[in-house]
Image 1 (cartoon, rainbow, N blue to C red):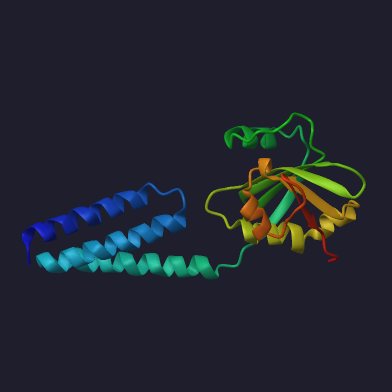
Image 2: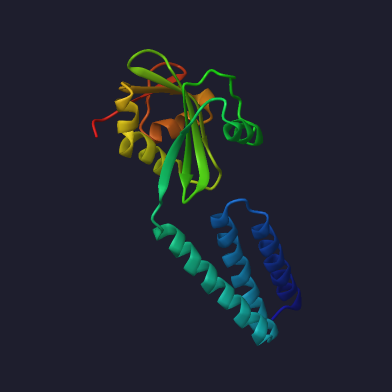
Length: 200
């Protein structure tokens, strides 16, 4: 086989492994790592280095196993309500560089998955029936649809128990308009979107 091709294959494998290590998302890290390790495995077989080939094939199998586990893992979302003057909330919003207004919010919900913070909702009351979500931040690598379903469908009772029937938000809250529609919000005006809470 062409030596230049083999050499380039080795370089490509190296680059893919290095790129995988720069991923913030564990899913992306494992996907790039699978491709890189598979390329290294092929490279190992071509150059006749069986230890290199076998090691990388094992790495591919381990990554695929963990990816499958992630896909089928049951999410254990929960949420806690924090006061606006909570030190933790203030530090979290500063670290995430969220644009928040001081003492404006009547409802601050920290969303967790297996005790890890995956998102935050910061809301204020518009009137007796409407609550405005001013900040809707979902940490990178998390599925916004799953979290939205957990907060707005499975736990709609939280909002309804406080007398709210309709959630209102807009794209300045931190979520794109297309995503808002995908998670069930309906466009009401140029900027505003509403979500009508079902009866749980």
